Image (cartoon, rainbow, N blue to C red; front, side, top):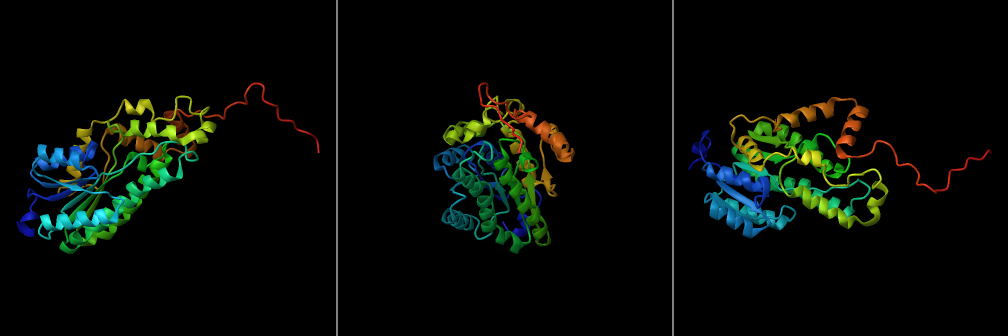
Length: 305
């Protein structure tokens, strides 16, 4: 198929989806493959990708660690061979991690690991696969951010920090690539029904004594708020939004699936800061006042100079 034929609205595309071994990455890869596109399902886990490819013949599994430059280069070469030098038509950056906990308490190595995947990893993959798109004057990059990339909650601020960074570089990249005919799209889901939150909450046990000063404030514990998890969106619904962002002829700059998510984002980003802080603290289960001194503690003595 020539580039002119591939540019037609309903023509099959060469699409890569990172994080394709599970969750919304897997669901998006399956949906796009079933629609007739050649999908490079990329993730660190080879076995899960083989299962995906067996169930969806249009999927081409690629083992990819987004934090490893050699792995990214190998994936780029494989795509070049599969596409006879054409490269990707669409790159969908889904791979990501979630770290929970108060900013002071999260171990530095976990903060770095989160930024390596959510920011530097997605950026490295984008930069590796972008040149053929720019040279052809056509292509699309879809970055999966979060509504947490628009505002931060207590206990998930470092995750938000990584998504804020993705939002920033995506906004700049969108303007930089527009003259070349390459579109950059952000998808900002809310809470999604995946094991990601349980895994993140379970990792808190490794923080040691760093959490102790905050336990009196977080009376319900440090996990992601149960009230948000109960309203989690289904994986397939987010995958449908990703497919739309990847394939629509004139995509929006941002997709924020779910009316409630759109309303919450507008509310929490437009209210006065103090008002928004009170709401976000309440959502996260954080007490608004400092804990009182323990019974029996020595009183503070004030003496005259």
